[in-house]
Length: 612
Image (cartoon, rainbow, N blue to C red):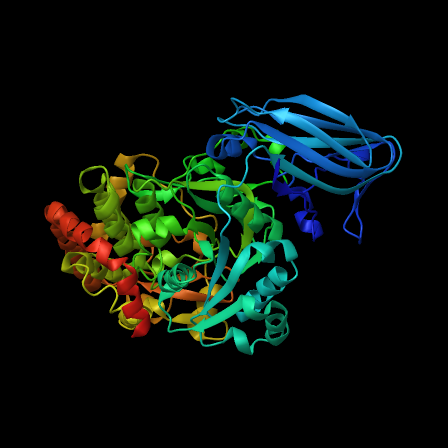
């Protein structure tokens, strides 16, 4: 039998429900002690049907061929251990039990459990029971023994990065399987200058490598990690990690053990938990919906699921094995065999590089498995909207390019229609800057792939330069006349409801388009007529005003949106024309981009980019 998961205990109270069940009363009295053990008081029960403590057996059955799972425990005291196994529908039954003893073990056959189901255990304490350790083992010998390169890409987040390095340095079991901890530093605030770096660098010693390079975005940083891994004969996988994260080393180890054990190599994705809301799970699996060629969960209702209020035991959909198509590169393990077969990242800078790579890998026979229990905490993006900032260019360009490479439906299904509708809504919402970027994005698609590598380092500068032509990009803060006058004036309350039907939405849009022909009152040019919260600044609310101040989440700054008929009609014509040209040329563009893709993602192309 070989170790798959080792039980770890919560390091902070706000993460407790990820490790230990708490059902109130006598069943919520277990104490995590300073020596790393767990005390379950006499006459109480403690369950472990939690995200990090339970074992996702179906994934090991499906991908590694496991047929028996063993639970091994180190205990002292008096009581009973019960093991439960859920099915794909979430219905659990007891499958074994043992008396508390210095060492206890329970074997569970899992043949036929590939479709879904978790294993977990419960301790019923007669006297005080101390849990010294627990681990889940499988009857599958590792099929790979190579070490892993942990590749962290960072841009101006040295404090987060040093904290991650500390966690890795303090985890001997993780360091045993790691060849190199590689930090690709693309920022101006260098990790090497951060307080505490020198100390952790001494601890990691030769295991730590820091590479400074220009800001080539996530695709440039992660491709550097891939390339460095290929150049290290002792590595057979790279684990990509973002910088603004917090890690449990055991969770990283689970991805490595799974990679080593699967029958055929797969991309092993780790789940994302919210750094600021630690029990909130971003997504259980993610796919690219071919109807609209957009990423997301297969069921949007399951996104941002709070494991504190919806624990494993009470959440049936979490028990069915979820097969995704890609995993975000906040944490993703990629085998070297996949890199050699399909190349490195597309030079996208940001956005869609992870999805495109995983789609490409899947087509080459390396599917992506987002493994429950392998996860980290990542700073979420729920308080900002990067679709209206400089990244809007990358959202559109990279989505269309990925569709040209991988779409199964003509013209990416409803992709172009959706993008054009989005532009109309943004124009009605007085968001002219992102529409200008969308037009530029489509023109870049039409011009072909030759400049992708060459323009990586100027991506941010070029996109922000477009914003200089749009007053909406100026941030107004408290103390400025524009801000103070708007905040002191009328507020929109709860905002208007969205038109209920497509017909009503189309009618409203048509009236609003005609409304752009009206002259803009002088007062609206001097200051905003109303202040709106970000969630209120919708395409069906903003057109009722000639100018609005959209408040940031903290309501201490805001963006001033002003109706500009000339800009509206110029951009409306430009985006319509660009979408039509892409639609007409779709097949030839697809051939061009598909023919160029192997060269764009090759190690030679990336070496030239890094050398430059």
